[in-house]
Length: 74
Image (tube, rainbow, N blue to C red; front, top):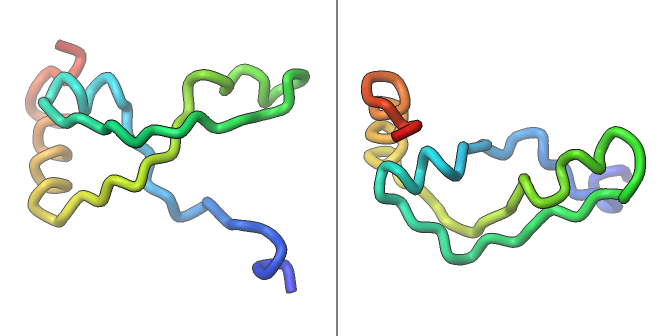
C-alpha cells in the first residue's frame, strides 16, 4: 500500500516563519527539508522546515487574527 511506503504531507499546515517570529512565537526544533540539488525543487532548500511544535486552537486563532489584522512583516 502506498501509505505504508511514503509519508504524505498534503495535510500539514504551513506557516511563514518570519511572521511567527515577529508575533513572538519561537520554534527551536526546526529541521530543514532536503530536496534534490537540481531542478524545480532546489529552490526550496534552506527555506522550508519541519517542526514538532503543536499549536492549540487558541494559538491558531491568535495567529490567524494577527496575520489578518496586524502587520506580521514587522
